[in-house]
Image 1 (tube, rainbow, N blue to C red):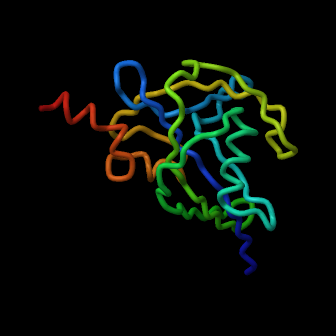
Image 2 (image 1 turned 120 degrees about the horizontal axis):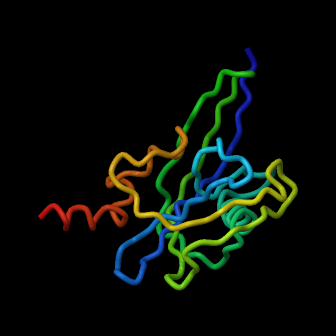
Length: 158
C-alpha cells in the first residue's frame, strides 16, 4: 500500500499580558463553527525550509511577522486512514509575540492554499491543564513542553 506523507508546521505563539501571564494565540473559524479551535500553521512547500514555511504560514494566516522563535517543541506524527492512508509530520515551534498586540482580531488568510480568503478570528488564551487542540497539536500543549503557559497555575496552588 502506498502511503503519502506531508510535512507541516505549527506555531505556538505566546505573549506576556499586562498582568505578567503568558497567553497562547488561538483562532476560531467564524464562518465554520463546527471547526475546532486551532493555532496557526500549514504545509511546507516543495524545496521550502521548515523555518521559511513557519514564518510564511504565520504571516499568511494571522498577519504577524518579526516573531522571536523561542525553541522547537518537536515533531508530531499523525496517521489518517480515511479517505486514504496519510502520514503527516508537523514541526511545532514556540514563538514570542509583542505584548502590545490587540486582544482579538480577524484576519483573512492570504496565499493560494485551500484556506485562502478564509476568515480566522484570533484571541489570546491562558490554557488550563488538559486544554484541547486537534490531535496532532494538543501533544505539546502541556507544562512539560510550554512551562511558560502554566507557571501561574503552580503559583496559585502554592
